[in-house]
Length: 540
Image 1 (cartoon, helix red, strand yellow):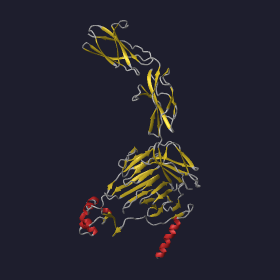
Image 2: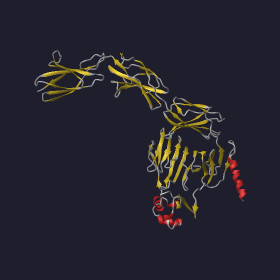
Image 3: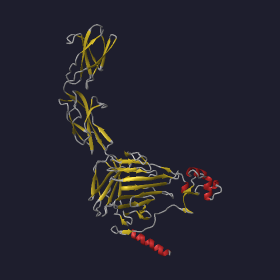
Image 4: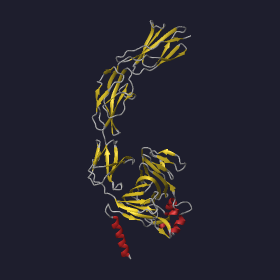
C-alpha cells in the first residue's frame, strides 16, 4: 500500500505541473487543511517557554477566566512546574486561551470608499487611520483601500468591491490570530503573515468558495459566475467549503457558483521580464519596457510603499508604458501578464524611488523696478528643472509672509495675478515645485502699479475729556498717512498737520470750538494721493 500511495502523490504533482494551456478540472476533493494538532480530539496550541519565563507567568498571560495554573499542570501531567527550563513545551487547549477582538487599521484610501459600521449600520467615508472592527463592511465604489490587520497582514481592496470583517480575534499574548473575511463581490489582494502557530487561521469566504491560508500572497475575485484565485507566493486551500484543494504558488483556480461547480486549476503566466530601471528617478515620465511574452494584455499596478496606497491600476498592451505624475516617494511597480481568461499571472515586482528636484525659475518680465498701468499685469518666467509646476506670489514686502495675490499652480511659464492689484509698490517672485515635496523660490523683483491711492475714510471718532481719537481705514500699499486739521470745512486755513504710520491718531482740541479733520494715504512710488472726506469734530 505505501508504494501505491506514493504513486498517487506523484500523479497529483504531475497534474499540477501541466503546461499553462492545460486545465485540470476537479469536482471532488478532500476537506480543508487542519493544522491544529489534537490530543484526544481536543484542538490545542503548543507553547515553548522562553528564557526567563515561568510556567505560572505563561498561565496567567494566556489563560482565560475559569482556567488556572493548576488545571494547566494537570492537563500536561506536570507535578512540579519549577523544574521546567527554557525550551520546554506546554500544551494548551484552544478553548482555554484568552480571546480579544483586535481591530484592523486603514493605512491608505484612494477615491471615495465607504465604511458600514457593524454596530449601527451607519455609513461613513473611509479615511486613513480608521479602525475596522468585527462586523464592519467596506464598500469601495470607484476607490481603493489598503487595510493592515493586527498581525501585519495586508489586504488591498479593488474598486467596486464589498468586504465584510466577520472575525478579527487575537488569542491573548500568544500571537495567534483568527481572521475571517467575506468578499461578497469584487477583488482583494492579500499578503498574509506566516501563521507559524498551530491554531492560527486566515480565511476569506465568497458566495461560491472559501480560501484558507497560512502565509502567502494571493488575489481573490468573485462575481456572479464564480470565484477566481491567483497564488503568487505560498499555498492556499481553495474550493467549495469542505472540498478544498491546496493551490501552490504559480497557479490559478476557479470555482463556479453552482452547488456542484467544478474546481479548475491552471498554471499562471510567468512574470514578464522587465528591462532594468534606475533605483532613483530624477525625471518623469518613467518608461517601463519588457520583453514581449505573447500575452494579449498586461496588468500594471503601482503602490506607495510607505502606506500601501494604490497609485495606478490599468491594463496595458504592447511591451512598454510611460509612468508620469508621480510625487516624490518610494513605490512598488507590479507588472503581470493576463491569460486568455483575463486573470493576472505572476507579477514582476520592481521597487523604485522618485526624487524630483525643483530649480529656481528665471524671471523674464516685468523687469526689476518696472511700472505697470494695468492692475492685472502678466508675469513671465522660464523653468530650469524637469516636471515642475509654478505659481506667482505677490507681496507688499520682500519677506512674502503675507501674500496680496498669487496665481494657480500650473506647468505654464506665464500667469496673471488672482485678483486686481491696487496702485502701489509690490514684490513678486515665482515659486516652483517638483514631486510634491521639493520647492524653490526665485529672487524677488519690485513692481509699481500706477494709479492713485484710494481716499482714506475715517471710521469712527472717540471723545474723552478734551482729547479726540480718530480711526480710519487701512489703504493697501500705503506707507503712511497725512493728516490735516482745520477750523473750516474747506481746509483753507490749516491749523495742524502731521504724517503718521498707524491708522489712528489722538488730537487735543479746545472745547466749544468746531474743527474739521481729513487724511490721505502716502506711497513711496509714483502714485497720486487723494484726500478723503472731512469729518467734523466738536468738544462741549
